[in-house]
Each structure stands twice: as C-alpha cells, then as structure tokens.
Length: 257
Image (cartoon, rainbow, N blue to C red):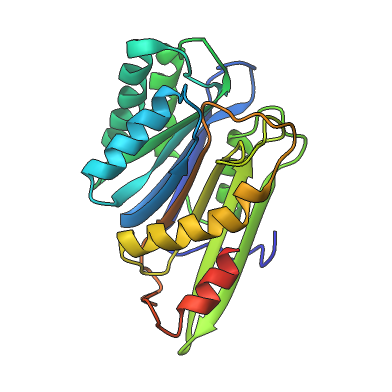
C-alpha cells in the first residue's frame, strides 16, 4: 500500500466472522464515516443485477448523495434471490445504521455464491459485533479489505496523499475480484474513501470519469457479474474543497487514478 500508514481522517472500520461460507474467516465488513459523506457510485450493467445493487442505487438516489457508510458481506452474493433478497439487503443496511447510530443511510454490497439466500441469522448477529469493534487506522482498513475477499489470491489495497495550501488530502481504496471481469463495469467490489470535501453531484462526475479510464478498461474473461459496485465516499475532514476549475481538482483526480 503506497503511503501505507495514511488513511483518510474521519473513518472507522469493523469486521466480524460469521461463517457465511467458511468458518474462522472475516466475512462481514463495515465502513463508517464520522459524519455523512458525499457519495458517488457506479454499478454493474448486468441485466440481472443483484439485490444489493438495486437497494444501493435506490438508497443513493433517495439520500441526495449523502451516505454514512457501507456494510459488506462475502461468501454469498444475494443475487437471483427475488423479493427476499431485497428484503435482506435492506435488513443489512438498517441493522448497520442502527448498530452504528448512523446519521445517514448505509449502502450494501454482497459477493460470493449466486442463487443462495443470505444466512440472515448469522449476518444479523455479526453486524452489531462488527459495529462494536469499529476502529480507525491502517490495520483496521486492511482487516476490512480482507473481509471482502472470495477467490482472490491477494488483497488489493492502495493509498495516496497530496498537499495543497498546507493541508493534506488522503485517498485510500480496496477492492476484490479475480474473475468475471469485463468493462461496464469490470467485475469487482471497490471501496474508496477520502477526507476531501466534494459536492455529491460533482463527485459522481469525477468518479464516473475515473472509472471509465481505469476499471472499465479491464477485461479478463469477457463476463460481467451481477454484483459489480464501486463506491467513493468523501467526508470533508481535511477541509480541502474539490471544485470545478479549483486548484485541488487536478491533484485529486491524479491521486484517485
């Protein structure tokens, strides 16, 4: 991880083992911003998008672009699960919001086996445990990055910083995915956090532009997935504002790449 000790200010991370697919493995992860963060996201173009994709798309639209964080599980994709899948995705979000006393809604991501309902008894027990162990820093972020892995052989994690007007902006990200990769968008879950301040609509413009130049240039096997999601949170803790034609825009986009 570049600048491995640098994680954006104002974020905490929690994980828990719930044996969704394998015993003794972290498979529930939580990102929480101290304050509601501007959020941008891109989602799969697959016709059979999974329940968490639909739920998160609707939540982001209704929230006017402000989100408190993300709850994620690995081991079960909650895809091809019908109405019950949507109910369970919403249940995950509401449990995470309640457990963290979140001031804004939570997004939901799932990855793993398709066509199987989530083991909600274990997930419902795990989410409060992940919330109870929220902590900041690089070690906690790495634990979160590990909790989202499925068939990956290594964790995928990076961090960058830049200085402007005597202030430091940090961007950190992690992702999972090793197969079913094809543009629109390349198959993965990706979570990026920054302490820059960016208005949600402008953040979405930036993120979509960056995705087209990065993730959407990746092809492995020509297959898209049901759950592809990339999320960018910007909580403004650095007090550096990213604005159109502002001096921080170019270094922000360069670091985000």
